[in-house]
Length: 635
Image (cartoon, rainbow, N blue to C red):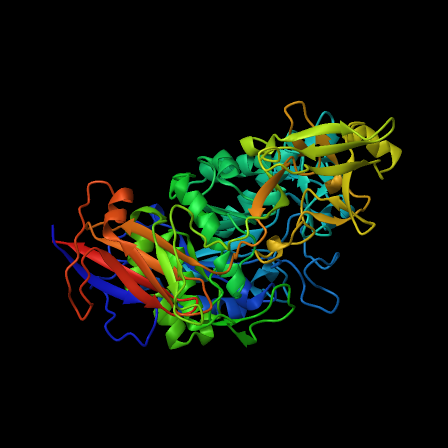
C-alpha cells in the first residue's frame, strides 16, 4: 500500500503546510450526534455580562461561527445576581428569586425579564438567529431561598406544595451542611428522597423549559461535589420534555473514568478537569486526563437521548477576563500562538466539546482561523479510534542537542531520579483504587489511618493520617455518627485536615501541589471521614472516597513529547505530535508502530508536497510548546 502525505503544522513559518479540502461542516449534519460546539460567556465576562452584550455576542456567533458548527450560545453563572457594589462570586443577599425560591434573571442586567417572562425573550431572539440558548445553573437550592424559607411550587396545582396535611418550604428540603464547596454562601443540595425536594427541582427545570432553554450546564454536582441523586433526577426530568435539552455537568476536579461511568445514559457532556485558563500548565495537564478517558473507550459514551463526551473545558482564547473577576473582557490570552494551536489540536484529537470562551465581538483573525480550522473541526466531528500514541521519541535541539530522550509505552518523559511522592485526592467510592486504608494503633488512646497500597513493594513507610476529634456541636455528632473523624497531617508543627472538596474551583496548576486536598482544620462538615469495612475512607460530606496516587517526585508535567492518533471517516489517518519542552524538539514516530495501534493498516510513506521522503517513520522539528498534525491518505 502506498500512502500520500499531507501535513498541517502548528507553525506559520512552515510554508508547506496545507489542508485537505472540505465542504461546509454544517450542511446536512446532525449535530446531536457530534461533540457539542458553541460559545460560553464565562472566560470573557465572568458573571457580569448584560443582555445587550449577550445578544450582540450571539449575533456574531450566528454570522461567523454558526456555519462551522458553533450552534450553542451559553450564558454562564450568576445571571440572577444584581450587579451592584458588594456583589461578587460568593456574596449573599444579592440574588433575585421569585416567590417559590427559584432564581430569575436580574432585571438590572436583563431588562426583558422585568415582565416576569424570565429568559423567554432572550431565547426567542437567539432562536431567530438559528442558534440554541444555554444557561448555567447551580446545584439544588440557593442559600438565599433557604434563609427566606420560601414555599415550594407544585407544578401540578400551581400552588404551594402540600403533603401530610402541611405546606412544605425551603428549609424542609435544603441540606445546609452540603453546601457547594466553592460557593458556600450560594447553593446547597436538596433532599431528593423527599417528594417535596423532587417537587422543587421539577419546578426549576420546567421553568427553564418554558423559557426556551436548549442547554443546561449543571454546576457543583460532579467531581469533588458528585451528587448522583440530583443528576439522576434532573436527567429524568429533561428526558420527558417534548424537545431535546442538552445536559452538561461541571466541574471536573478529581474525576476519573470510574466515576464518569456512573453517568451512563444521564448526561451529554461532563467536565473531566478543573477550570482551564490560559496558562501553559493548564494546557499541559490535560494530556493525561484526555488519554485516560480515551483508553477507557468513553469517547463517545452513552448519553442522555444520544451520546456523551468528556469535556476538557472551554477554550480561553482571544480577548478574556480573569477568574472570579467582577468585570468583563480586558486582556489578551496569555498563551503563545503555538500553545493555542496545541490546545485546539488536543481538544480536537480527543473529541472534546469545543466551547469558545473569548469575546466574540473582538475576535481577531488569527483566533478565528484557529477555532474554525477545517481539518481540526473535521477531526473533532468525525474521527474515530482516538487515542494517545505512545511510541514516539524526542530529541531536544538546544543545549542538550545530543541527548536523545526515548519513549516507549509511557507518554511523559522522565528524569533519571526515581524517587516517589504521594498525592492524596478523592474519587468515586466504586473506584477499585480507593480501598487501601487501614487503622493502626499509636498506643492506648490514639490511632492513625494509613494507606499501604504500593508501599511494601517500594519498601517505604506508609502514608498515615492522624485521627482528630470532631469539632462539631454535639447535636451534629448524631448526624454524622461517632465513627466519623477529622484526619490531619502535621508539617513543621502546623496541622492541616483532609478536605472532601476544595473551597473553590481548583485550576489544574493547583492540583500539582504536593497535598492538594489538605487545608486549615475547621468546624465544617467537609472534613468528616469514615473508614468503611471495605478499606475505603469515605467523606460524609460528598460521598467520595480518599485515595493516594503514586507519582514520581521529579516528573516534569509540563515537558516532554506526546502524540495522538485517530482515523478519519474516509480512511485517512491523523497523527499529532506535541512538544511540551521549552526548546525545539525533533519528534519521530515509526510507521510500523502505528500499525500496532491501528491493526490491519500496512503504512508506507513516499514523498509529496515538499515533505522530505522517509523510509519508515515520520519526523518533524516542532517549536517550543507547539504541535504538528499529519494527515495520511491511503491510495
